[in-house]
Image (cartoon, one colour):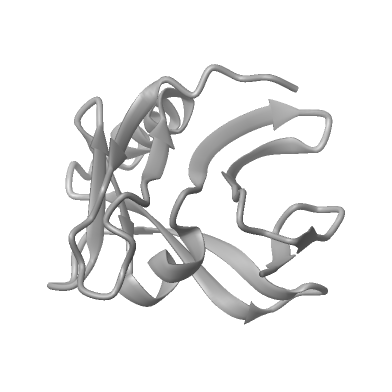
Length: 128
């Protein structure tokens, strides 16, 4: 499946990270975040993506909505909405794209991670 990931991205200048690494926040994901912000009637909400240990491949992606940003969070804006990532998770997400899909498996936010060596069938678990 080919998607146009025309979007906003960020090249963070956080110590220890590749200065050229980017995190892409697709227009489709930003549009869905905007719709959910309107539904919740809370303009402070941001989509938080994180990586935790677990899943069948070693690490798994997680998504939540957060109305606060930590001092060391990395923030990517697109069309007036924000995606935030903590610095530890960014290490695993550098170079990735965050998108929103609606298909036979349902509707969901997804991470397209070129650094993942293995992924599980559901796409939520990966190894590097």
